[in-house]
Image (cartoon, rainbow, N blue to C red; front, side, top):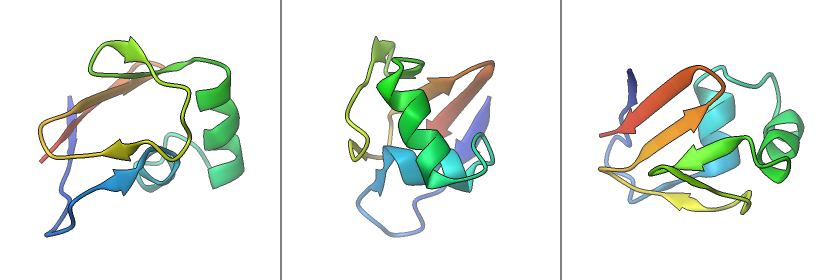
Length: 69
C-alpha cells in the first residue's frame, strides 16, 4: 500500500490525488477513470471527481491502494 501525505492541507480532490500518485497521466484521464466507476474510496465506488479525500481514508484504483496520512 502506498501512502499520500496531505502535508498540512485538509483534503485533496480525488482526481488530483490520482494524478499526483502517478496512477493517471493527466487530470482528464483521472476524471474518466472515476466516471467509469473504477475508483473506490473506503471500499465504495466514488463517482464524484472532486470528492474531498481526507486523512485516514483509503483510495483504490486499479491494482493500487493509497492510504491518506
